[in-house]
Image (cartoon, rainbow, N blue to C red; front, side, top):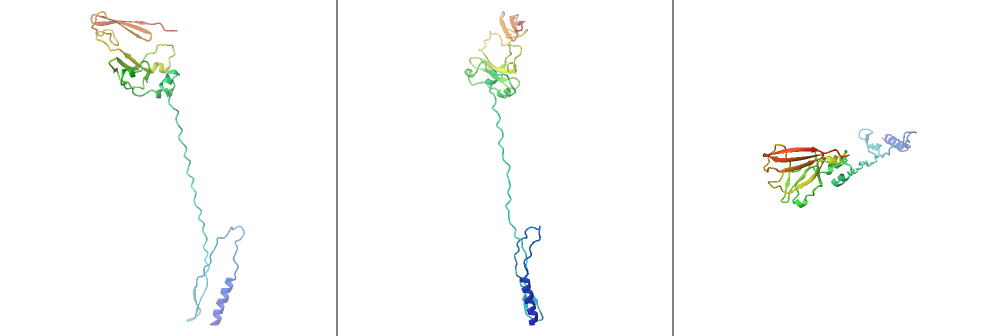
Length: 220
């Protein structure tokens, strides 16, 4: 009984005297290990005493490295250039951006004094305007006006819409636009109309207008 117990004590002493093994060349650093002695009951003989043998367990130490996420940089949207005004487009050569300077819809001003006679109010093909704005002082329209000038008019000169006003029309006044064969009520009445490059004269005879148009020579 004594001999067996002494033999286990000698084996434990030899195990404790073993040097720690170092990693071979080129293998890197070995993970740290913690040695835990776990008693294991070993029976030597029936009814004999039990001895505890240590068991070495290696647990690698994990190092936590926080993950770094880089958020994409937000770039500011470019600021669009300001749109030109109608006044600027009227004084310079017409450019594509000028179409945005004119409104899509025009309404009648509140008062006759608010109407800017002769000023641009829209662009043909883009601006929707009322047929007439009626006031006690007269009737105004935002309409396209024919261009009478040089041989190379700009787009604005051809398509620009302006405010045009006329005094209230009396029953005996000439109509806004007479036409041949149109009914008239004042015998001998003569009405003159002009357009770019032509002049039209209409006279009332036998209850109907008779008109004659004269073409003007082309300006140099």
